[in-house]
Amino acid sequence: MMLWSFIAATFFGIITPGPGVLTTAGIGANYGFQAGLRFVLGLFVGNNAVYFIVAGGLFATLEAFPLIRVVLAIASLLFLLYLALKIAFAGSKVAFINPGKPPGFWGGLMLQFINPKAYAINAFFLSNFPIMQEAPLTEIAVKFIIINLFWVPIHFLWLGLGVWLQSLDLAPKWQRMINIGMAVAMLLVVVLAAFVSKTN
Image (cartoon, rainbow, N blue to C red; front, side, top):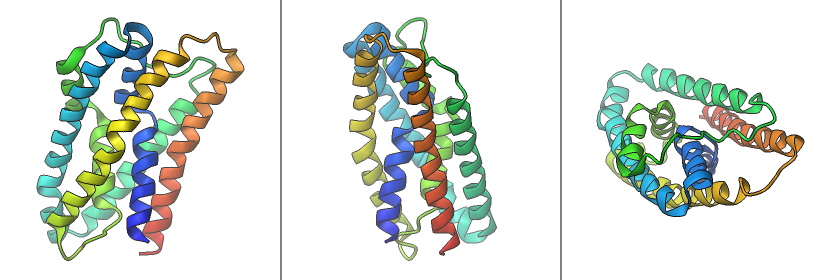
């Protein structure tokens, strides 16, 4: 049950908007698939680096101070809630970030090191859903694999969506509905994590 809850949270947590996927969609919309591909590769390397930065001291700290797990869980949930509300009230324009020029590989890499969602979502994944409490290193490895199994195709999906969606002349109400849909998906992560925390 815990593993499936983690898988569901991973899907919704990654597919919902943050600076990385929104910039990816913006690059796809304005510069095409090839420019977006280089950026996504940088995001991929950067996100995995952030994952291991977060994981590097997290379990040792949680073992010594269990209260920190609760604090991290609450902080990450609040940030996800903030993102959801910001997107929901973005107005009638689809909330894609539109960069002035394609950042490329290094732009994607550096974005993840200053991307608050990258830290929040990885802390969220690692501090919630304890699937192998007796083997924390194995849990880190298993979660790493599951996260990347979702991360790669989802980012390609956002890139393709940016290329396709911005070629359409959508009415303002449909753009507003897209924003609300993205926000609802983000809120599903919050609800799922709250439910799991309550039952453990």
